[in-house]
Image 1 (cartoon, helix red, strand yellow):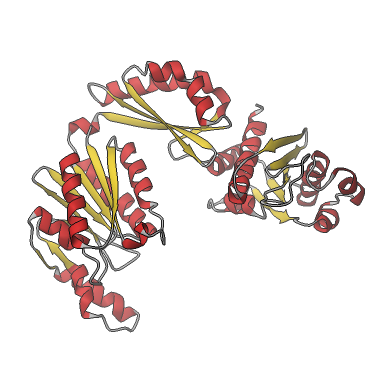
Image 2 (cartoon, rainbow, N blue to C red):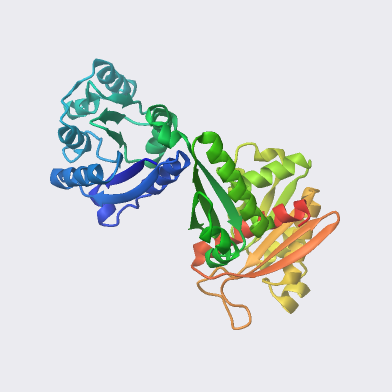
Amino acid sequence: MKNAFIIATGTELLIGNATDTNSAFIAERLAELGIKTIGKIIVGDKKEEILGAFRLGADLADIIISTGGLGPTKDDLTKETACEFMQVKMEVVDQEAAKLKDFFARRKKAMPDSNIKQAMFPQESVILPNELGTAPGMYLFKNGKIIILLPGPPKEMKKIFTDKVEPLLREKLDSQVKKAVTKTIKVFGPGESQVEEMISEIIDDPQGCSIALLAVEGEIHIRITAEGENSEDSRKIMEDVTDRIKTKLTDHIYGHDNDTLPSILAELMKENGMTLAVAESCTGGYLAKTITDLPGSSAYFWGGAITYSNEAKNELLGVRKEIIASYGAVSQETALVMAQGIKRIADSSIGLSITGIAGPEGGTETKPVGLVYIAIVGDKLEKVKPLNFTGDRESIRILSVKSALDLIRRSIAGQ
């Protein structure tokens, strides 16, 4: 298996003004190609720091991928430093210079002289076009090493990596990588230690696979890499260990690889010809946003109501004042009527509600911060699920939304 080393450049990353999300994305996509990330480093904008990072990467890995430092300013030194390290000379590429000039002309601005450095590349390199910005990436193979330079803005980096870098890696990497097969099993419900315990005998005896567990915002992702004599053998090994894991985790598994809870919900709703409406309190519309972030959600999602106050619950959803007075806004009874109310208003197949205490204030001894009720109502379905989460306000909201999506999944599947 090939190894990779990731370099994130930018003083803003070191002093906490920005967070390095690029490295996690790159490492995940590399794993899907059968490439193991063995390390990463964050460095500032000084040449000697960047040069040291490339030296370290070259000592440890076959592939060095950097993000950031491809802009036009004096402290954007990644490309110059990488080329110096690889002992290749940069020169202006006329086609790239023309693209830059056109970029500024269309905005009716004069191009600063400093921007021309973004059009300079070694003859041996492959230029990676940047459709979302002015800084193209670069791919260079020399002396047995692959150097990949990508811009720092995550949107630009992700598009270039997906559209350009992945195809190049698939084409260029040797047969050792091509015979490796990876899969991610996605789990919701049990925590990381529970999942580890449930599949402990498989982890102890992976039979030709490597297995890694990763906690991702309430989910557990099980990354499996199989490497047999050839790609067909690898797939067989993968299928065997996947079947063993499925036997242990059963309905806690919601999907694989690129699946998400919203995408699984979309498939189920469309397959069953169902519609959904939601009523949210503590999540403040986050559930509706998560659903509608997926294109085509209008085919099954009616919409929702953010009934944050008691008055909104009463006037919009029909939660009687007596219910709130007797049981509270955060209660099984209120959650149920909220779900019934939104289903009635929308005339949808399913009505779902969330009410809870996201904190940091508002909790009591009997109803602590993190207490959430999720109710789901269908034509032949009526269920309220109490949950107790820990963490900050944002974490509680995220877990509430994912739990709601999972409850719909399980309800439709009859689990």
